[in-house]
Length: 198
Image (cartoon, rainbow, N blue to C red; front, top):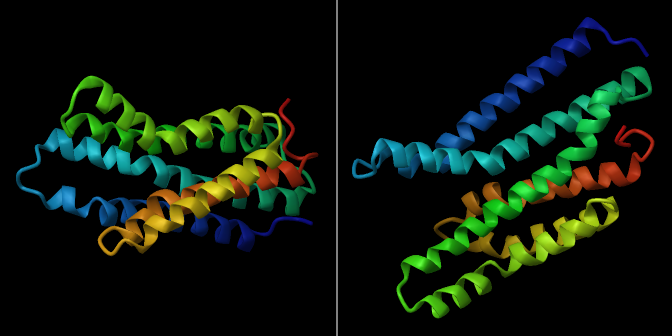
């Protein structure tokens, strides 16, 4: 199948829409930091950068999947560079999401108490990240394991979506990126011939 000018245009419009959605979502989720007069500019930028991590993973992964689907449809195969990218993206994105989630456990060190109480609190709050990190070791070689564990993690984080104050933000920051990583592992699992690392 030959790629037409129309399909190229639709593809690039889709990529621009994803970029606009990314910028809009960063502004929407980070709005309270942007408008806060007490927050120093450096802290605002740090918070917006932190917010950007899962959103880059989300929208970047969507763009990657669309690119791979387009190449597969047009050429019947995926070029080796994109194939490598498709192989490593869920693994690297998984590690970045584990780090991102674990950052929220650092709050326990601001709550007071002695060192051992704080350390215990950190381990308890970081338990989901620790479990994901251990399982990620097995998922690296077996994409079906990544598909299962990140799918379960997305379902686990769904419970935070029903929080009245942060529900939509929690969905965008945690559930959607974890679901996208799940999808990428599924693609690695099902498209074995297309997603082999070279």
